[in-house]
Image (cartoon, rainbow, N blue to C red; front, side, top):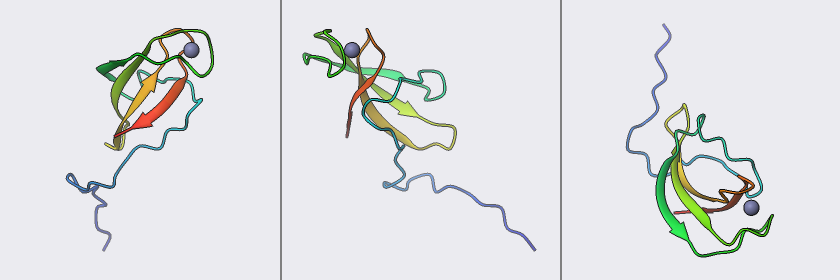
Length: 78
Ligand SMILES: [Zn+2]
């Protein structure tokens, strides 16, 4: 008999895997605005970066800082 696989709801180590330099996938990641950073983008000359809470289709979540200009992930934070 097969048992249904369930993802624990309150597992603190279930974090989304996102790499710096990745393109921001706002729809796939269900991004919600979190905060602004006064930091220069690593990839272009923009001097503003926005932080978002993200969650993927498996319920894994994390926070990423994304440049609104080139839409690349600049950092992954807690
Ligand atoms: Zn940029």
